[in-house]
Length: 264
Ligand code: KIV
Image (tube, rainbow, N blue to C red; front, side):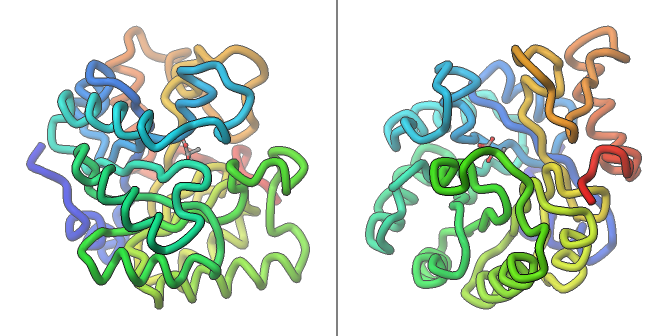
């Protein structure tokens, strides 16, 4: 696969072609995921739960994100790498800029931060200085203590309208991508239709431009209950490589997620 860039993924959106994203946290899995043709790797702060066994993403540090981004960059075979700015690493625009610089120097091609229009100033600052940004809306796990749990967001009219407005303002501020987590299918569809930038969904139904899953969830190896939006791709594949390829194919063909994986 030739190197995937922001331009590649924006062109996919314009052409109505979906793309696949998966998390990875180390070099071996980065190699497997990118070799399977998955366009983007997310070095998610979900590593706090998946790798470190924490009960939320809140304890994850910038140094840990830098370390895992470096590991992923070494194994990557041409996918675009997105790295999460962890909890409180972007409480001010200056912090956002300093910590994003560390992630970009570790090998990220784009950074992701969680929150609504209060982030517009940081998004403008990063974007103007050459750092692409993905804005994460809906269920924002770093705010789990404020949200009162991992719940679907945007179910009532007021919060849905706020999310639509946040998406518009963040794009206007310079965001290059949006990510919607645990959002009703119809709301994610409306945001995707209105956006000029690619919209990645997780638990956001079948109408977004791309899908992301946590690697360990889609391989069926995460302990505990599987969230409604996750499909176990290992269950119908004989190997990890086959499961990754099946995921990429089903996302591109619009077969995953089907309606039953979404929220109404
Ligand atoms: O950290 C992460 O893996 C994420 C996904 C759940 C989207 O942000």
